[in-house]
Length: 249
Image 1 (tube, rainbow, N blue to C red):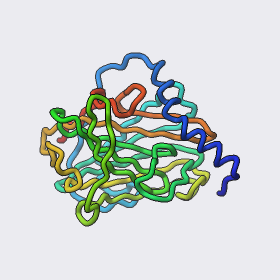
Image 2 (spheres, rainbow, N blue to C red):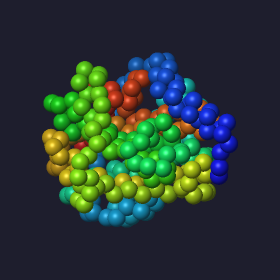
Image 3 (spheres, rainbow, N blue to C red):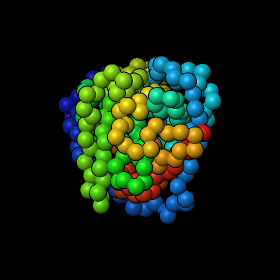
Image 4 (cartoon, one colour):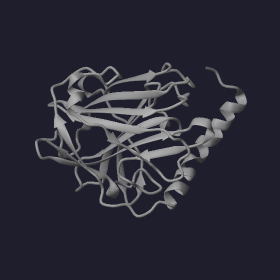
């Protein structure tokens, strides 16, 4: 589906104000309870295809994401996670009506359009964590984030190829993974190798290892914005002290 110039301008204006809208939504939220905890099961390696139909996923339950206050869209959002000897697997799933995504390249500001995100803070001794974003068109943003007293900036991976490169795939139900397509649901499936996470500490995880983490979704349909999170954070998704905990089984 194509968009008119006025529609494109409207989405651009929305992208410019999305951070403010999410901040306003967070301002009205109540104090959250203790951050959530999730047990991550071990698996053998498998190939991702975007559908999440590998047998290994049957051992993991869906974990819902909660809509952030003042969200405009009545969509669902959920994820699964597994880990192997070589990396971690994440499967994202969400209902939708339109794939509000136009960016056609990796490493762009994907959070300004429809996106799923995960953050892994592997060692609480160091304020550095890994952030990953994937759009419904299959474009990605993997970055390492040093967060020093609330001042943060992502750094892109170097030598991003071979056994350091993320495996990723997306799928859609009721439509196709093209810009502004009408759909009923979309999924993203990713494999993040431990080789890419070096030199973060506490990697690879062993039985009993704990990482702090969070998972998010943002949707921009109808020139309105809705966010979802696993561990409730305030105005910024980078409030890593509020992240939940992953326990590797």
